[in-house]
Image (cartoon, rainbow, N blue to C red):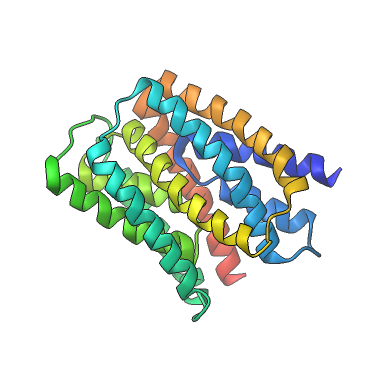
Amino acid sequence: MDFLLATLASLLAGFIDALVGGGGLILLPALFALFPEAAAATLLGSSKGAAFFGTATAARQYHKILPLPWKALLPAVFASMLGAFSGAWVVTLISPDFLRRLLPFLMLAVLIYTLLRGQMGQTHVPRYQGRQEQFIACIIGLTIGFYDGFFGPGTGSFFVFLFVRALGYDFLHATVCAKLLNLSTNFAALCLFGITGHIWWALVLPMALANITGALLGSTMALRYGSGFVRWIFIAVVSLLIVKTGADAFF
């Protein structure tokens, strides 16, 4: 029964994550609730394992329809991986607990800004070209990649917000780019968890299939209904993140 519930949670997580990120908001708490005796690193590694396959599926689905700015994204992919490895290394030296109380306020600022800028992310008008776009994408990848390796919650949502705000992408294109960068940070983390033996493959395999199914459904809906729909899902997910991270931090 616990494996079935974990698989269903992975299905929902894949669906939400394919739309705007934030699938970890659903899957990771579910795993900790269902398997309280398991090592935290094993549950984190198993969650990353399932999410990696779902994120890869969503990225592939989006790439079939939407052109990607590969010249900007490829260097940003390596920057994201470097950031994730660095964050994972730093977390072995210092505790990320200070971020636990700061995160709800960061997410609240993102939510308020998005609500106040009603037209933000509705149209795709990139602000930069060439090396400027490449440089800013790398800064986003390095910064949020480090955050993902060091702490993690809301990584996909931060990627989406910064691609919209800093680069002028609409929510749909920003989601596609976020998927690719999030895939690279997940891969970096997955390698570390795999090397240290913290992946529960018996659990990962059914969760990965469910996550892939959810990702297919989520990416299909995003492509069908466009940036306006994705924007409201983004607002809903960020609102849930505020509630969840606030409860974790203060209660």
